[in-house]
Image 1: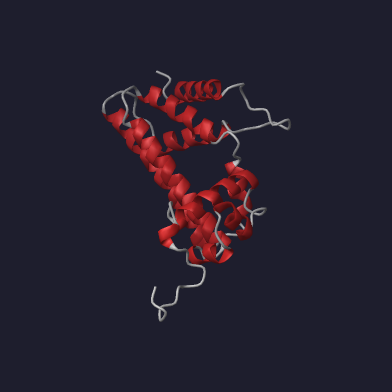
Image 2: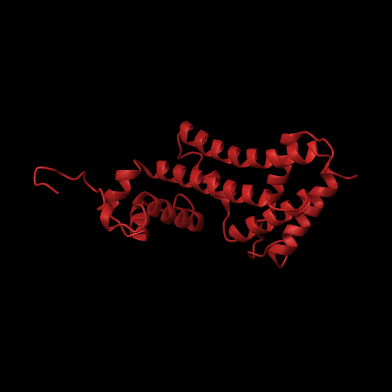
Length: 207
């Protein structure tokens, strides 16, 4: 670098990075937010987890709320991509939902996402809350496309599309329930997934 050039404060040396710094920060933030919730995690914690300076985190993300929003957007995007892949695989809609449910429960086994989102409602701006909601809606859109195809081919009867998807997504969240002793509804994620999809299928498509 020429002596006349000055590097922005906190900006990482990109040549030394194996993973893009902003991605490493997001990944570290996701790990911490999902384990400890929003309020208990600081920018210092994220910087330490990512192996960067606090200034570097602030170079990419202006505030903790901004970092959390981007973390949620990325997580929802990843879920949407995985869902889309599973929905394009061979099998009936029932079989695909069973695979998606099992995979989702395995990936979120130790995460109380609903509680995390609730505690951020007073910390995020209206725009940040909207961005988080839009990211979740993109995931729902992926499911809506699969349900639409199944209805068009006659695999399942016509039902109100958004109602069908929102009901399924709500039951997905139920699968993460833990009692006071931190015990799940069923001994394994496979059993939980089977119970959720069977219950959903019998109620939504009784014939």
